[in-house]
Length: 223
Image (cartoon, rainbow, N blue to C red; front, side):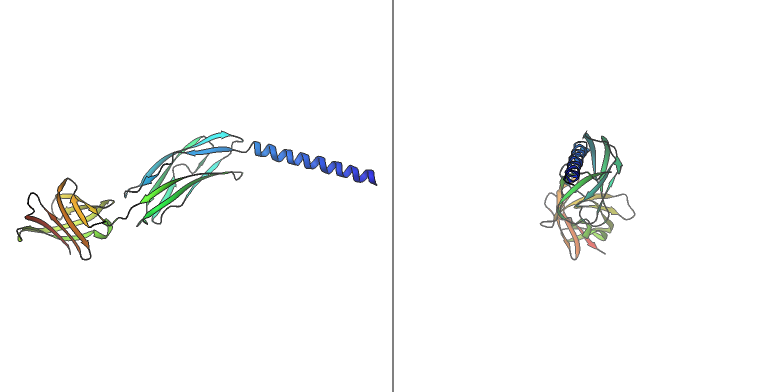
């Protein structure tokens, strides 16, 4: 009986050693890869494109599926190639899908292999406060000289970039852009910063003074 028990113990020890050895071999052959190409980004109202390299380092080759997390609300992330066998390239595109939340965000890109190996890389995404979206609409325009109206018309104002408005006159090819400073409600004409002004979001009004002495004022009031 003792010999039988001794034999069973020996077998169990051998099986345990073999199992441990197999686990070590599996770990040794586990896929190792890195995610390269991420860098901190500042959102300016347009889509962000990030070419990435999923680089093979060692271990068994497997399919790796990509994912992204930590994006602000109002922004989506898509990969040109959702999966592949390292080394492979893919492009991550971050696209606004609505009003993008402001603040600083840690965006994490994760690759997961078929066997469950995960590797991640992160970047910081800064989304500044953007007040331009609150200023879009139809505006009545008045050109004033020393307080006297010289011209008037109608403009359609839309957002062309972060904190930037595009002014297009109705029935005319005239158009220009105005850059807003959301911190102090001042603005200037993009093509000629000497044209400076102020704006308010409630009511929506934009007033721009023309150089050199500011006697000519361009007034825009939402209709």
